[in-house]
Picture (cartoon, rainbow, N blue to C red):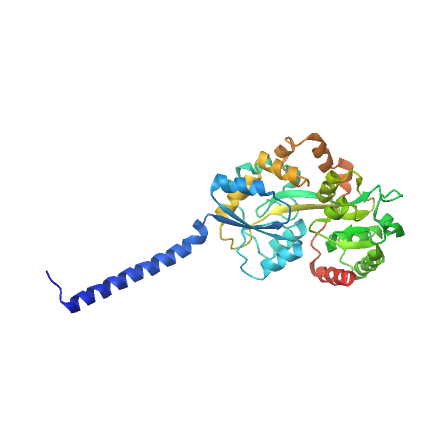
Length: 354
């Protein structure tokens, strides 16, 4: 049957509308699915925490693309997430920031049914005060804040933070750019609680830190091991893993557990509220919990590892470096959320660094 010209135009118009509507609806439906179905996971983590070959292995095994951004401090991470929809699927806060984020409803519950390798985590690192049922967090790394000294470049024994005020350290110390760690050390040195909320005590810690400034060459959270290993500084106030890496390159580096204050920290994998690829990121977390994978991470970045099965696979010399004797572990102190006093720490730290 022939159609008239008007009939043909009408038929094409209706068909086009149907096709367009289908395209729009299909597109909307696809857009609604795209984030869930997209083979991707967006990571926001500390730098030098997961080696590239581990990321590549995950991508090869799962077909899930890893998009990886880094931050240098808890404050930077928190600020970015607080600003709105970041699009990240996992971040790695220290315990006291995990506490803040949980209180503020910033985290998704983790489906532990999707984490069969969670059983590998030592119970000593599970069920901490911040997240007693581990509904929101999976332990990833832990460690200490320590002092590292280059014995070849100094002529005195260093046992604690007070020794670093010696004039021989002038312009030759690298310090972590972490206000709670460094101000905590100054507080403890004066016999005060590193988690104090007392404004006067925090300000006094700032004054003590200013007295140390002539000896500080730089603040560095990214790679303090570099200047240590290269003999550019005589000492460092830094995290244990960085100190071990410096010692690998330079055997003159000695690690010191400071007598005044042993900072303990634990960092945890968490899923931000509204994460676009929740199932993918749970696959990623479980992948990291596999003993062989966890071991590979520690071989590259020798921080404390809560994965008891991975520890069994480590060389004994490395394992002895990252594990703490029981008596030292008992005197360790975790940084905790100090509530409104955080603003005081921020102000005092800014004054120290200005």
